Length: 272
Image 1 (cartoon, rainbow, N blue to C red):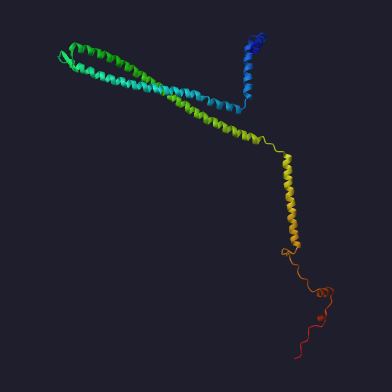
Image 2: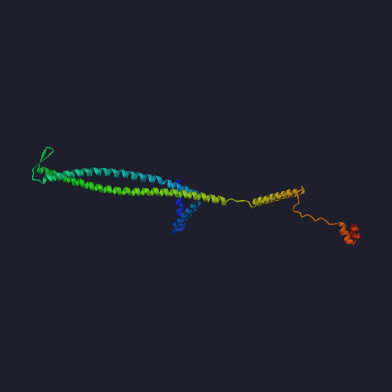
């Protein structure tokens, strides 16, 4: 199957080269770029966020390997430090012995006794020369190892700083991924709200129902008020009509008639 795919691709390349000539490579590069851009456009933001989260998770093996390297270097530094301290202590003892022999040889004595054993001056001189040579060799080794220890410490400190930086950057990436997740949720919520469609006809129908209900309630309230007036409410708001005057007097005055009391005139004074 792979052989057929390879053969087909090779055939297309050869055919494109024959048809397009020297511009075939440029066309192929342009097509490849367009395909990559089209594929990227089809990738969702959610998928990209998952990919970023996986990339952050994949950092842990590298950080763990670096952590193991730092731990091994730390152990090596401690071991070399301990060995150097032991060798420097031995050098200090060798130095004391060399200075002791040197001080003895400053005298005119021809023989020396050390731990009940007698040594001639020449033997002591030879032993001192051998001790001093060994001391110088050991001292050079210690100096070289001290330089190695210094270099190892510098490397260890550099790797520790790098590890600290990696851990801090990983934590920062975790925070940024969490922020991206929060922003994505906000955008998704906003998109959900904006994509909601409400039928205007339905809204108008509900508004008409509300208006009709308000009218029904208005009518019922008006009926209650009218029933209260019919059932004997005191019409305090109506002005009372003025009482009518003397109808007979108004008629007599209108037609020029005189009543019996007016025709009789004033009453006579009673006889005393």
